[in-house]
Image (tube, rainbow, N blue to C red; front, side):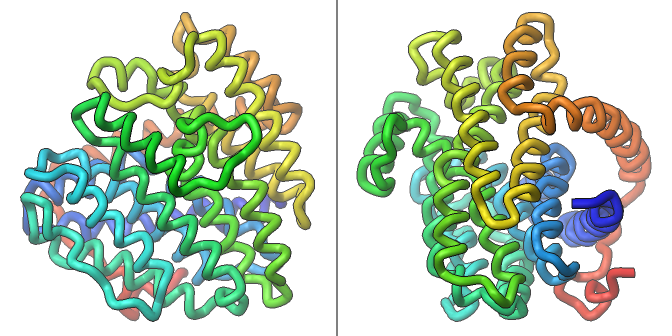
Length: 371
């Protein structure tokens, strides 16, 4: 993965995000509009991380990049909008997350995603995200090879809908039941590690990137799925929980690290997952690029403010070491990048004080001009 590729990906992701921001700003329901814009702002790094997978194929594929970003924005929106109070939170979360499955199955009839949600008028925002993904999937030369595995991962990702159950005892019981019923046994993996892995999109992104390679075989897809699920995906979710510990504690949110019997056990296990992630990535075909993405994922989380507070510095250093030399090299770069993003976000916030105007529809002909 060279600097030239990264220089193409970053501005391309930015253009995609801005197109979706334009559509989100025109959502009629004020609550859903706020959720959509908040997700785009607060979870911008997720879209950047998804875009990195566009560097896996040998050739640039703008359809792939659009798919990766749209799918991640879709997940982040669903995760945010699921947190709003609903008469039946479980049914609401399950129904909303059907959009993930529909996005990766171009031949399936779409669902009524908001039928259990108090707001019903998103102006077609979720359907536009779903349709963009479906159109891009059809363009990938080996999509039929990876489609069964990508759909399995998308169905598993719907476990996110259980994370927002306001009753922690009921939530944990349902998550444990889901893991025992839905996840294949993995040596030494606890039920919360399995559900943590299932809630990540990284395996989906890797499979979609593989589908851009016409020579992709089913064995390649199974190897990628096996490396990312559960190892790389579990490490990603645990690191996300690590940097969000204070926020989750303040908001009574679900944090996967809280399931471990002690903070020391949580640190040790997260280090193990990080080390195993890098090892699994290197074993793949094109392993150096997968390893760079895995190391970049580790560095992205550990460059966050939540990993740099005084009480976490020793643990953060240990996790960086577990990520190896690549993580150590990428960490200062991502810290600088985060500072730049904060400055750019302030500029966007100042501009947003003016009334929003919807940009070109992401599925319109205007959006196909990538500049």
